[in-house]
Length: 130
Image 1 (cartoon, one colour):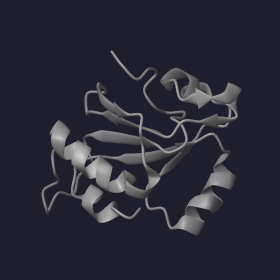
Image 2 (cartoon, one colour):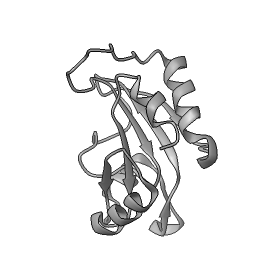
Image 3 (cartoon, rainbow, N blue to C red):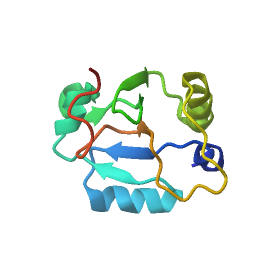
Image 4 (cartoon, rainbow, N blue to C red):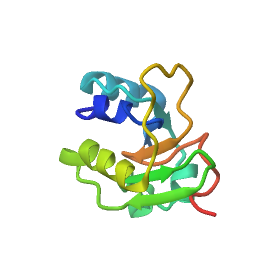
C-alpha cells in the first residue's frame, strides 16, 4: 500500500491472497487501508498449487508471483521483505519489462503481478508455471 501510486503506473493487476476467509481478511485489509483486491483461499487449494503452504497448512509463505498477460510465470520473489515489498515490486516489474500504463488509458490492466502476501487463492491460474 505504501507504493500503490508507483505500482499503479504499471499495466498490472496486483492481488493479495490469504488463507483467511473473506470476511476476516476484509476487516484486516480495511484496517490497513489496503487498496488492492484480496482473494480468499481458506481451504488452501491454490496455496498448495503454488507451493506456499508451510507448517502443514498453518500459514503460507509470503511470496510474490509475477505472471504476464499470457499467464506465464515470469518470476517469483521468495524473499519478500514486508517493509520494502512495494518498492521491491516496482523494481522487479521494471527489471522484467512489464509495461507502464498510458496516462489516458481507460482499459483494465492487461498484465498480472500477483503478490502472495499470504497465499495464492481461487481464481488464479491452475499452476504457477508452464
